[in-house]
Length: 194
Image (cartoon, rainbow, N blue to C red):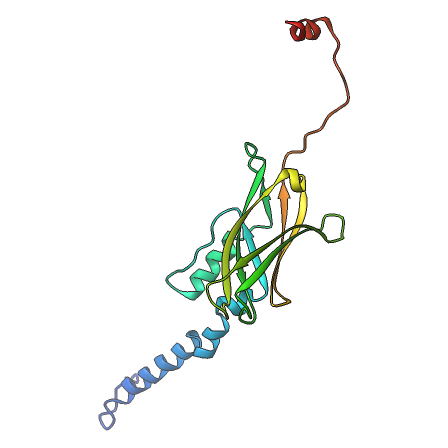
């Protein structure tokens, strides 16, 4: 018995080419998301209603939507350390809204939620360039003298009487501890009198 040899049929010379192209298109549909899936992955859909917080500036654009979303996620922080020289926290915010901003005026509220109650620390009115904005980027500086170190902070953005976005962050800093011990030794008093 002779071994079987695979041969293309001469009656349908383009059959395998068409079948290969059909298989390629089918596999491309499985890998490449549909336009509705791409719309669902917009930053407003992914981060809607959130204030993202960081100690570094957030990106404002990128080559693709997926890359922008991943860079924003990497940049987002849950805790920020204070600058020991100035005893301040520089907080960069990127807020995404589920609905467009209803008014030009928006308010940024800063609450201390360390003791499980909301204590208003600061409230700032700002003005946007247009109504209907779906995102907003800004920054603020929080001082230790107003908050203290190692506090949990909640930041909300409201406009037109509605809360549009909320975010939380821990503000970390070195706590200055005093032990209550006073040194009245001879060396200490002589240095003070000179």
